Length: 316
Image (cartoon, rainbow, N blue to C red; front, side, top):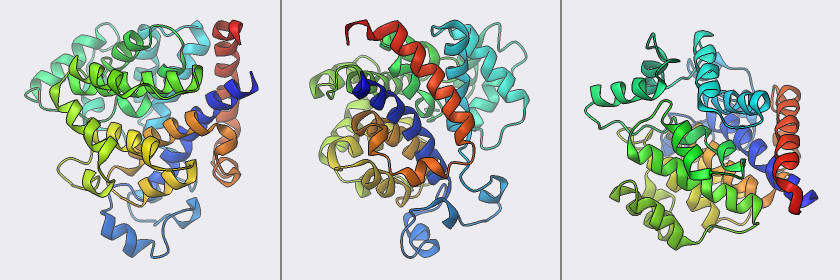
């Protein structure tokens, strides 16, 4: 039971840590990261305070973890994953003028009747963009969906589709959620063949990024390419690459944040996976203790953990 709690907490805290440190290099190229952080980015207080970053306090997370918290609060309210409750929480969050929110999510949540027809709203925005937009705003928040040990694929699809209708977005959310579920509840990685089966069910491009995650390098993913840095399959592949190629939480965290690009999202995805694998105890305490809103986060994490244990841990 202690091991199970360790993995649940590791996943959720890993998400927030990756998001917060990733903010320090978000939208910088790999070369810019080297110039701004000549000794390497590794601590929140190093944050380069340009016009983008100074909108947040040191140790803050961004919209990635804000949206995860919308899902967490829906789980606390319903003791289930109910898409309508999550959609309501997304809309209430949007009304508070959050910082860092992606263009696709802004367009979807901004539609007047979003709460009544969230899936239709997401489809309208996707269609309006020529069915080409496969942004990472769905996969950045999906880790908590994988913790719910029931109907993982269905829940991941439904929560992704509240804002992102592209099948690449949906498939990447299913892969990350199913992997987290296997790491947490079975203490093992999902078989590679299963990943490819999931990929084939959604879009053929997903398999190409799975191949890069399994056999390529982080540099080859070109996370800082300005044309594709917010692509859902890059965030997915980055997270899986860390799972297969690093030997600890900190190693993966620092590899991703020092690669630049959409670093907060890439690190949120990667570190939720690494947290699920290595557990809360595998996260260096500095990263937990120096999150700006750690007490608020701890309260929500503990509540969600209690619900998960009560609901699903009868056989542990």
